[in-house]
Image: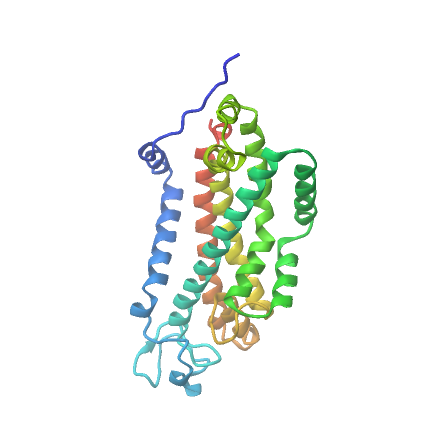
Length: 296
């Protein structure tokens, strides 16, 4: 019996099909635009929100359109510390993207390798690893991230560890499922009969063939990591107050909502929602194109 092989599409064919969906294209443009704004934030932002010496309390909690002591117009107003909210949002997007991409990359690497190796080794090792993963997946990601962040303290490095720990299990489960199907195929048996080492077979043969579903999970988990970072910062266990992430900005303005100073929380919240929704829309389209079972 011959195995049916699904030929991967070329990058040109992938993008051609992707461009046929205007909503996904618009979401991709939003992600690219936000990424460029975050990268060039020091050149675009009229103020450096990290420079505490440059902040003036006289400018605190001013409405959009207010002209501050620095002589420039705060188009989105200022927060409770006197930061220009537009500048703070640009730097907050920068931090959110950094945390999401770094945590997603680390979780992707660990999860893909552990899941593929467990499927290849099999036996008690596979059972032990997957039962640990199942146990971790039974807990909400926000709960795991909160506990780890609270134990490690505030800081970028500690936050990346917390986000990675709460998300790597999704990659392990996905990689294990894809690798289990690959281990039973003829090319793996042929590679082992040469013979090749198990490490070489996993990293050079099995792992590359598990990438399509892992890429789909990665897009979803990057958006999830951004949301988790904002949530942890809002709860006070994420980044320190000196680094104005989106979650910290939302938390700082939450107490002023009832007093009419809505802009301090609303505008960072809108920026966060737009970014997460755009990434999720792109991820859904990528999932539909990489998974032939979902194609109509």
